[in-house]
Length: 68
Image (cartoon, rainbow, N blue to C red):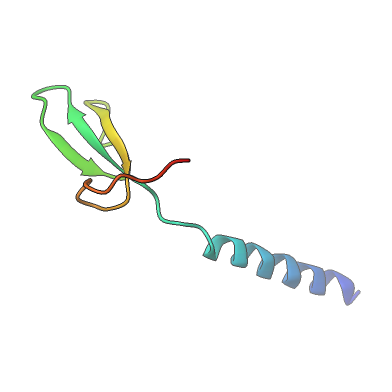
């Protein structure tokens, strides 16, 4: 009976360790379909936007991310 709680604790600690080692999400420039303006964001701004460039390391979309 003591094995199950120890297994659950071990699995939880392993999952937390993996989640903590995850890196930040990349940034992309998004272009408006309506007027062509560009905006830097990590996720899509909605159906009226197309991905223009990226991925980038920073929130200003100036430093390209090395994707090798």
